[in-house]
Image 1: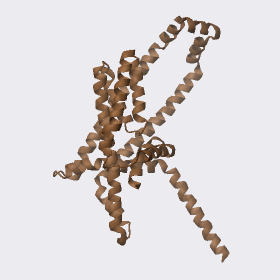
Image 2 (image 1 turned 45 degrees about the vertical axis):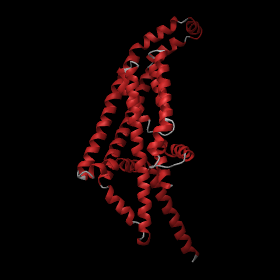
Image 3 (image 1 turned 135 degrees about the vertical axis):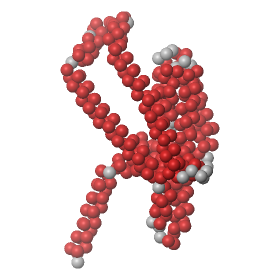
Image 4 (image 1 turned 90 degrees about the vertical axis):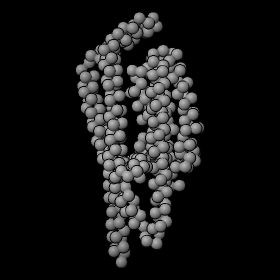
Length: 324
């Protein structure tokens, strides 16, 4: 019956469209779930290490979670006060900066013709700017609330996955038919091992970058910014391909503000360590765990970044390792 066949084809198409639309709307939550499961696989070797020494899995997860939360608290404690202090300092010194610009002969002549500085001062005093600032503060507050929500959900999901990871693995294994279950167990175990090895390796790489930056900044006399910048460098080290380069640029900007010699020392030292990290540290850390060719690493990171942004770029390489 053509009507019968056409009806069921149309019903199947509508159902598929509804499912795809639902998945698109739930994309952010699904990304958080995948990210949390990946983090759980990366932290699982530490939990297994404690568990193999007679510590119950629940207590081992609690110890790892306490360390992770302490790191997040340290990052917030180090970064937020520095940013707040610099913003207040910029607001306080802004009039002086404008007056200093007027003392420059070339800028003074340019301002005499076009009255740029006066226009900037009028813009700073205008009510539209105040309204825009409050609107920007509202949007910034929403963005901060979203980040806090995402971090909270990710931490809760990571702890849940980490606690019940053996049970979750068995559920995944039993989804396969009995005749293929041994092969499925082998492939899934290898994939989980690759993903966990990559995440654990990235934690080590980030820790080395943090320690190196902290020592370097203290040696060159930037101890007041050492903790904050070292944490920023460590967090950016998780971003594939470009994360360490962005970190070098940020630290160099701060260093050059204290002097040309200081900035050059920072750039040379961090570029040298970047090469040492790329050709000596990472190959030895990821030699057995990931085993992804360099070309595929670049393609995976770029593709993941285009599809899902920063989180996609981070998840792309362990996903490629699992697929291989």
